[in-house]
Length: 261
Length: 274
Image 1 (tube, each protein chain N blue to C red):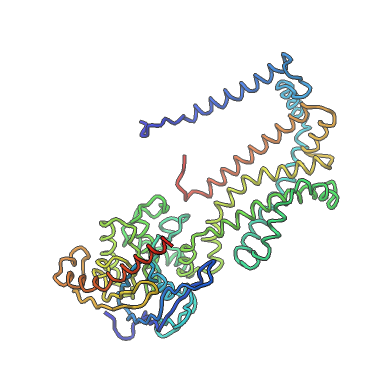
Image 2: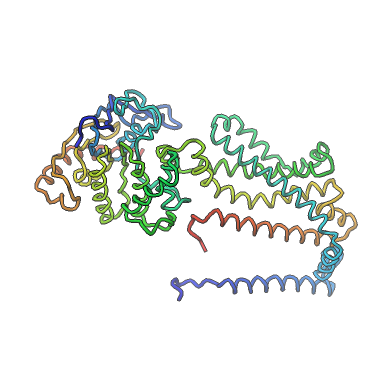
């Protein structure tokens, strides 16, 4: 029996609504292009997209490029995260250092990294390295700022209590600071995964001979709207899969929090 | 009662503590010229209006902050830095939300390098003493306020510190839970015979628990008066209130405290207006 007056839709209901929304969107799109309300050349067509995706999967063409993009994303993401957490810890521990570097960090973060991509390609070449650097430059700041904030928000009483209970600096990191900052770090990871993929794709888009960015860029140069959109759908699917994985990991580390659902 | 050769005696000698006021070019004097001796095994309460530096005194004894001037000694040794021989029960329960009841209670032993096999029975014993057997694997968010306070108490007691500092530990609890906890505390104290310094703004609580009561003045905090509480022990906090001397003590100390509370209140009102 419902305890509150407000009725909440069940999970099944929510799923049904999502499906309805998606099908009507695709249906409308298909109809609009089929009956000539909008030009198929510019917006493509769901059936055409499906055919393109099917062909990519059938021939295995897309997996090679997706794998390249994922490799760049993953390497950059892991390195950027490790670097962000590490520097976040160092700056939170040595406050003077944080004060000295504060303007630099803010300035670097304000710089539009996407515009830097051509420079990275110039410095690090057309291959993997320039994309990884690009991803790191995007992921690092997100993770760094949230780690730093997370560590500053740590309950002072908890830190003092741990010190009185006999915690060494290592104990303090392991049992107090890290668990308490993890909430913030995880929140930032889900944002930075999106950034990581953007970094890799933009890097590929601007200069590369493989990867999803290259596929999209190539389709664009052929005025092939279907190719561009199909590439985007593949990327979207990839991000959603990663997000689900991260959500699971977050739940795994948040066992001590009251569940909100 | 305190006997010779026992450890856990605290001495404050003309201790002053000032803090810089952020964004203002002045200092705030939290406590001024406080001298106080607490014997080993004694239960002393500190009462005073809010903002009189009661909590600051505890932080000084714990070594969390250094005194601006004067000195704090424990068994004759000057306090310099956090002292792991004492325990601190915070106003808000400073237990670790990502650890279970058993992990929380065992944490100080882990920090102190006690191996798991000898820690386990001690943890189990203390969880039993605070009446949380069966809740070992619960996380703090699943516990009531009173239960969390018990975990905090067990976490402090499990390593048997010589001195226990308590900063309004039961302030946030309802009256019934509070009385139960106070009785538990008295029982534990009677068994372990540790020094307790207990900060509260509740005079009744202070009288019911203590050997002596220190009344502080409104900010800057100074010692206004010290009262011995010669009520019989063992006490029950719910019943000791009906003792004929209880009312007399309450009246005497309250007269002292009342003026300070009024000064503190007027100042806080002015602060709000200004």
